Length: 301
Image: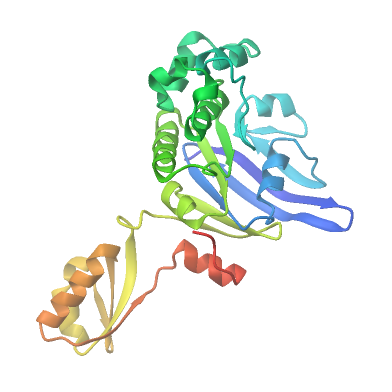
């Protein structure tokens, strides 16, 4: 059974007459890359700040690794790491010196752990260069290294790809997935970018106007099996031909399971067997479909 690292129950946040968060319920598990998807101003940052105790909740309960932030705040925060805004460092010091400086302020962070964190974020020999020479992507890596020095069970990143080029985003995705796998860290990524969340995360919550509208599983588009309906001229024969795709016939339709890239091949197979294809309809909803259905708007890509 997976262990819940972050639990949010019945969270409400108000300022004056304005409701910023409305009855938020959320669970994030050990080793999970979890997305928090919503447009700017949807409540993502307020939710993150509430989890980290930076803003006070009006109602509800938040626990990190089993510790309530109301009753055991210090213990809960020992298990949390975060980058809420752009990470700041001493520019005249090397990356390694910055991490050592941070480590001195915490118990039980030794040189071995610093090297582990540097290895996880793939900074290599650049860790010995002055931070003033770092690109934005390298500063982001150093920020993640600092945030995981104390081996937190929960890592929260607010808009982590801002300013990164495609190569930097790809590298970020790679080392965050490795972090989840090797250390079992639960990583929460807050973003307004649909593609970023789809590419990085296994689950995502859609938030708008301070309310969680849905939580959805995300599969790799190339590996996820989609449920697809074909309207054809001979459903029974088509189902026989496509038994390897668990095809089932009903009236003039067949429903089957296939990967995204297999759908045009199936269509071509049917046509080659003199079976007319009148329509191909996906029955599985993508994250984009769900977002548009619930919010009425198109997410940024």
